[in-house]
Image (cartoon, rainbow, N blue to C red):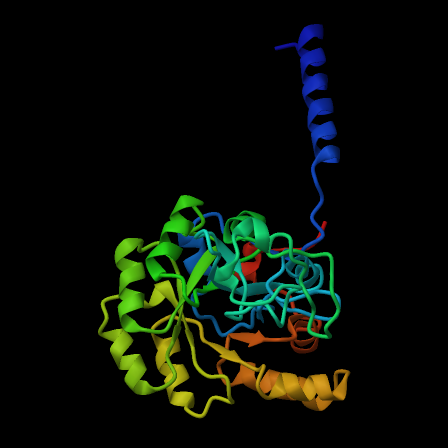
Length: 318
C-alpha cells in the first residue's frame, strides 16, 4: 500500500515534533536513582553479592559552602555521586515540617532559639550556615519541597526527630512518594506502625545485634520492606550480616565516626583508606552511610558501574 503525500507530511511533522521535544527536554546533571514504584524500590535493595555504587549521605552531604539539610547541598552531592540522602525533620511554630537537625537554630542558621519558636515564614527569612561557619544565601527547606525535589532524582531517608511516625507516613502518602521516600525507624512499635499504615513504605531500621534481629524477625514486617542499619563502628559480628543477607535484605553501616574522620584528617584519598572502605563492602555492608558521600563514593567505587540486574535504577548525568 502506497503512502499518500498527506501521510508523508503527517509523518514528517510527527518526527519533527519528537525531535524538537527531545532537544527542549531538560537535561539532568545528577547521578539519579530512580524507581518507578514501590515494588521497584524493594527490588533495588534486594541483597546481591555485587556491589552497588551507592552511598547514603548523612544530612545530605554538607561541605564548605553547602550547609546540611539543604536542597542546594543535595544537588551538589548528586552532581558527583549516586547517593541516598538522610535528612532530619523538625516542626515550625505553626506546625509545618522543615529540614533541620538540631532542636535550636544557633549552629546552622542566622537565627537563635528553638526551631519550633518561629513560624515557617520566619524560618524562611533565615540564612543557612555551613560547617565552617560561613553564612550562605540558602534557606531552610520544607519537607514538602524536599519530597518533590527528590522525585526522579534520589531516595530520601527521613530521620523524624520529634515528628510523629504517623505524620511521616501521611506526608509520603500525600505526595504519593512511596517509591522514593523511606522512614528511619528504631523502635519495633514504630516499624510495625509504618507497615500497618502503609505496607508500601520502606524503612531503615536498627539491627545492631542478634536480639534485635530476632525482635524484628518476629514483628510480622517482611524483610523486603527494610534496610537494616548495623553499626556506626566496624561491624563485629559477620554472622549477623550473613543472617540478614539470608533474609534477602541489604545491610547499611556508618563510616562517619571512624573512617570518615581519617579521610578528613588526611585531606586526600590514600590506598590504605580505599582498602578500609573496600573491607567494609567485602565484609557484607551493602550501603555505607557517610558524612563524605562524594569522596567516599569516588574512593570506594572508582571504575565501578551498577550491576546489570540493577542498572535500570541508576541514571547517569545527561
